[in-house]
Image 1 (tube, rainbow, N blue to C red):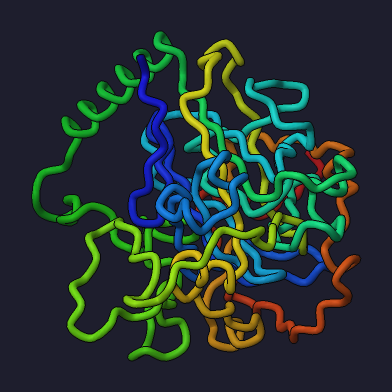
Image 2: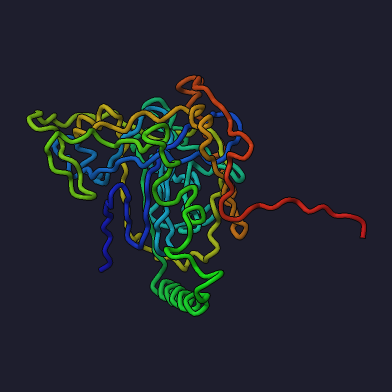
Length: 391
């Protein structure tokens, strides 16, 4: 029987079939206009609900999964970097599909497509609500009607984020692995000799292998702890205390602190913010290439910072840096273009979802757009148009 266990590796969720998902903190975009892809400002910390069973609501224990802390109106994107084999990943926001706008389903579907294709889709910044664009994921409390769930279904019951992965069926997975093996052998046989033009030790340089969605670090290198320095994800340990084991959850509370009893936590879900240029790619495989049964799934609870501290004993990451300061520092924004992929058309359901500002009021945070040259092109350059003439 196949292993359906989802595991935490640091702050990465690893679903069966080689799927890797990280939740990335980012700048919140204005709700007007269309923008480049915002930068990553570090990972959200992720903890298992089961490790805090005496402090979380009963319904959380029933749903299982993991939790992470978000501020009101904080933005995030999902990185799939590190996914090792082809997979179809369903992404739900309050059990509404972020790709199709349809109700959550235990099966893959087309017409409309209700999943993203990995590793072709390197990340997902929001719901598929426009042609060649998405609207940014933004955290809001349940009960206002501002979440995607509330606007699409008329009620807010689930909140959070839901992930479900499907692997290729046995035949197609064996075929893919054989093709990868042959490709690797061919690459080794074509390796140039040492000398001019030889491969550099260690593989690609950082500039070629990095970029938006690459492995950490996700922001520009800090200058001696100044702006852009890695954000702490927890309060520092007490003097003399041993460091935690890699990937382990911190102690639930400081020594001597009384345990807080379970109570109804402030429930959070995802609404939408500004629009950005990002395609959600159409699957070019037949649906029959994928397994009929999900390889694994996980429920991701969103927790307010005060609740996070009460439950885990950790301080939540600090509130994200303001957008104008990031731009003034000259740090990069991104555009991503895959010339071989086809964008999925948006559905009417998701195209009609309104931004959270309609419920929470105008966004008065200062905005300073990127300057020319600050936006970096990743993967395939779109290319300049070629003019035609008389001939």
